[in-house]
Image 1 (spheres, one colour):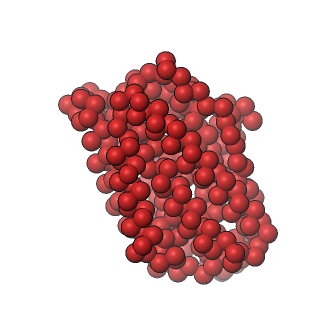
Image 2: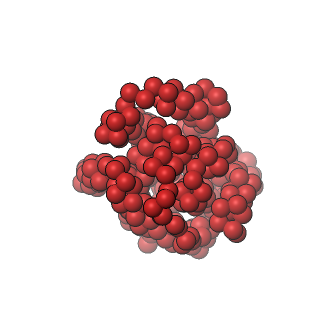
Image 3: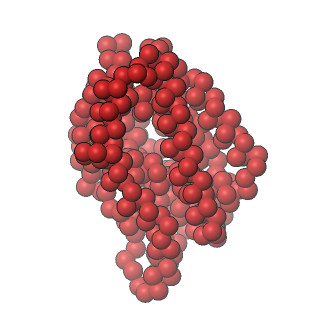
Length: 288
C-alpha cells in the first residue's frame, strides 16, 4: 500500500529522495471454503504439532482481528490521504472477514476434538484488557507490531516454503487466502500510525512486548492442545516440527533478519517485496 504519506515518511527517514512504496490496495475476497467431514484430523503433513500450531494461531484470530480493526478505525477520521483511506477500508474489510471465517474454522476444529474455544476466550480477555489499559496510540502500535509478525508468517513461512503443499488442499486454501491478504494489508496500520504522528519509542516498545507475548502465548497454547489431544509425549512429532521450524529448512530461524528490520528508523513494511510469492499463491490457490 502506498500514499503521499508513505513516500514523504520514507524520504524523511532516509534524508534523500526515495521511490514510493508499492501500490497495493487490500482486496476483500470471499473464497468458497469447503470444511468437509473427510478433512483429516491432522491436516498439515499428518502431523499433530504442525496442525495444532496453526490451530492455536487460528484461535487468536477472531478476537485479535477485531482488535486490529478497532485500533485503526479509531484514527480513520484523521486520515486525509485518499489512497490511505482506500487502504484502510480494504484493511477493515479483510480483517473482518478473517475474523468471521476463522470463527467458523475454529468451530469446525472444536467439533473434531480440538479445544479452541477456551483459547479464544483467553485471547479475548487479553484484548479487552489492552482496550481498557492502553492508550489508542499504544493499541495501534501493538497492531503495527503484530501485523509485522503476521506478514512474516504469511510471506516467509506459508507462501515461501512447502507448508501449503503439505496440507489437505481444502485447509491449504484457507491459509493461502489469509496469508495473501495479510501480505496485501501489511503496511496499512503502520501507515496510519505514521500519518497520525505515532511515536517511534512506542512503536518499538510494543514490538518488544509482542516479541515476548506472541511466542509465549502460542507455545503455551500448543502444549495445552497437544496434552488435551493425547499427543504431548509424541517425541517424533515434536522433533520433526522443531527441525522444520529451526533446523532444516528452518523457516522460523530464517524469519529473524526480516523481524529485526522492524527496529530500523528506515523500516517500512513494503521495503520487503513479496509480490512474486503472493501472485503465485493467488493463481494456485484462489484462481486469480
